[in-house]
Length: 175
Image (cartoon, rainbow, N blue to C red):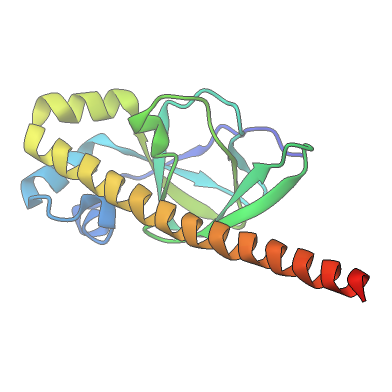
């Protein structure tokens, strides 16, 4: 298994690139210009681990290009892919909200460029422009809410499948 890699630095992101990311929706051109000059872009290659489940959480990321996979360990210790993320998708945003250890491992599927946003940078954004900071946090909350709704649907489907299988196997044994 790959260890967490120190990424290669990359040129800054442009305000036009930021405008494409839902996380930055409704932000002013001036604020996007400020962000573009503040945030760093990092490069990863296939197999590079961005972070591991259980690691301290100090930043979130936006996929500028490439693909990232999200892996979650079962209680038995087996890793399962739970998501593939692509351009303009965010991950690690729970670190901005709750500052708990990482809930999953994230790894590059191919060459990828990621925009890194640290908790310190979020604090600086809060001090720089409270309205824009609030919009970013609201966009994070919307994304987390959307993901929770999807997870609720998947859990309901899974539960029904298990119950259906149990009922089918129980009725087959009764015959």
